Length: 445
Image (spheres, rainbow, N blue to C red):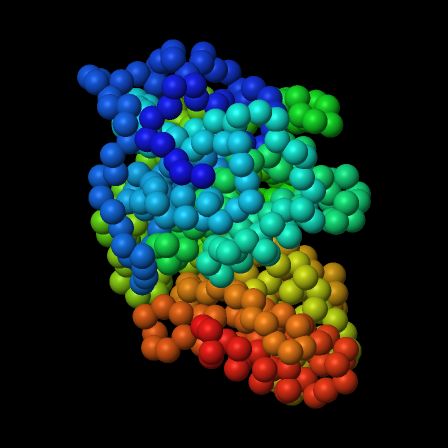
């Protein structure tokens, strides 16, 4: 459904829980950080229009000094230069009705940014994870948008499933299944796919207090939010408010490729997304900075290699330890034959992961092996931008991982486990399914 540039009756768009987040004095009241200087035009006019792929080979830094929510993410991307038509194209592909999206200017501490509101015409149906997954699977979305939106909603569903001790297919989204949250997630996925930049996220501030949600009174940060943020650096602030919503947490944790308080980059474009609430000690804004960088981020050391030499471990235990490290969040894990003191043959077990997971990976190494100590080696990491697309083959649909970026032709690789599953079902060699998947990708990349 088309969006509008102005709004007469803004919807109080908190994203995540149907409750009042923190202390607010309403949309029309300016409180300290919310004052403005001079006239702020209501109609949103983009400062620039960034073409598709404008972020290739660049960094998109999301500076969440006041937290993050779904609407703030879309607003920051729009103020950065992603045209409203990019978001509208993704929303119009969804089988949704009874809503209007409004982009407008609003100021916090004299900084004028973009505010996004969703106005609903009436009650919307409750939706479960299966309903939303089917909607995203069947909608004519661009593959990159579909994949990112699916991954964000799956993270939300896994968080709810764990909190309530239920199968993921039994999860019903009472708050985040509403139309506005679907719009947030699909819109954020569309904006990020349009830019194709490497996403860097700042550590997230966590408020405190309690909120009333569908299941009763919850502590802040909300349990689902904390679960969504596994592996994401956070810090506490003395503010009684929900600074990071479940939807914002799921978006941030899914799309961020690394974390930094401020990465090494040359800012080229800046945008601000405005949140709903006014806070006394900080402007409620999400800053998006798109900039260039010089090759690998050698001075940031965003990841860590955790390793240990073990001279009394069997091959089975070494294999089990590698599996446990991967399950704990390691991006990769491996064993290297070596020789230790007194000529003893040994294995060096290694795991690569975000620095925030270093202690967790070390604990796994010491729990699953006989080592009495581990080493930490901070490292920088540079990766090709990646996405996963679904291709149809005579054996069934297969996810194909595609790595792009300014590094020559894209690399494509079908998901091996899925190919094995389909090969067994069809009674054919797995290479036949892999070949069919690659043929399908080559025909319709």
